[in-house]
Picture 1 (cartoon, rainbow, N blue to C red):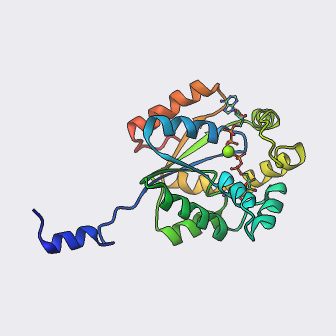
Picture 2: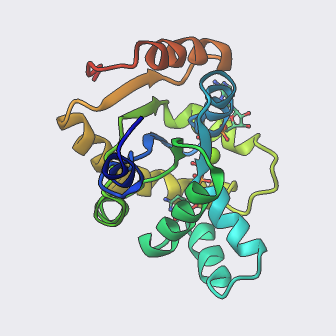
Length: 207
Ligand SMILES: Nc1ncnc2c1ncn2[C@@H]1O[C@H](COP(=O)(O)OP(=O)(O)O)[C@@H](O)[C@H]1O
Ligand SMILES: Nc1ccn([C@@H]2O[C@H](COP(=O)(O)OP(=O)(O)O)[C@@H](O)[C@H]2O)c(=O)n1
Ligand SMILES: [Mg+2]
């Protein structure tokens, strides 16, 4: 049996284990949400989509709702402060300690702020690599009634992805943390590659 002191240390913040976080990144329509649903089923992660959390925030009638709605319509990235608060709340409420954070960080500001606020480094970064042509086709057929799945906004989102989100992937690539997946294949084939990464626990860089 542990001593009183052991018990105190075990319960204290000093030894509190940080959650496991995998960032799931890739252009709009690359299949992040689809594959996350599969990963949840097989590997016991909780899926947190930054976009879904922001859309829920709009629906809840929050004071930030109008600002978020305008940013999404323009394909722009919502200030980190807002998105990180939503992610932290969802992490706390989940009761889990393994998270797939989908669609975040989408720019350097997202990345640096998350690191500064949570002190969490991702275990690895799953990067769904897909051609714009294929992503455009998928988004135009998504049929979820999203205000940003129209050709004008899609073009803006592609530009933001290239200019702001790819540098984040480069940042993690330089640290050997990126696991790149060919996301242009059918859903089942992509998931076969995803499974290998989650099963092997993936210590090696693949980009
Ligand atoms: N590998 C795939 N092949 C064809 N269609 C796909 C594939 N993965 C996802 N989709 C479809 O493409 C659309 C976008 O997928 P989604 O998972 O929402 O992507 P993201 O979250 O990256 O925007 C959805 O309608 C989804 O059903
Ligand atoms: N980290 C994030 C993620 C999404 N968003 C906003 O939410 C929109 C939709 O994000 P999403 O992840 O649901 O989109 P998909 O890549 O899944 O198509 C983005 O275009 C941004 O406007 C954001 O501002 N910051
Ligand atoms: Mg998505």
